Image (tube, rainbow, N blue to C red; front, side, top):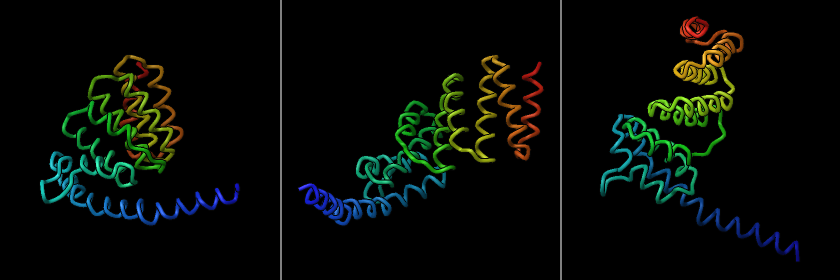
Length: 192
């Protein structure tokens, strides 16, 4: 009976993947293309809303295909659109719905949430997201970037000791960081 149940579950998965999830994912990929083009042109509102009878925007893609990997990506795009339009609360809501595990996009999305909190003048929340992004990235490009942003947020709150720790960690862990001169400048300020 157990073996029959397992075979049934495997068969159901195959059928759903072949006839439901696969075609839905393919449709989502086709639909998102025009919105991505508008995004690349900085036409953020058009990318969000789409154009009636021409193409779907990211918000429609989320509604229609939110359960697909392309729908998941639409959350990130829509969140960045709202961020660029200065609608930070809406941006945070959508960016937090994105899920991923790669070393570039995922930490960048978490860092973008930090940027939204920074723009909302909530340095404490910004620090939380910047530190999370830095630890997720674990690479020479994004980790020092988000550590630096967290340090600047600490400086804005006059928590110099934490800023110094972060900036010093950049100098030791990422000696070839492209913005090292800026890091050293802020380190000098934080030590005053």
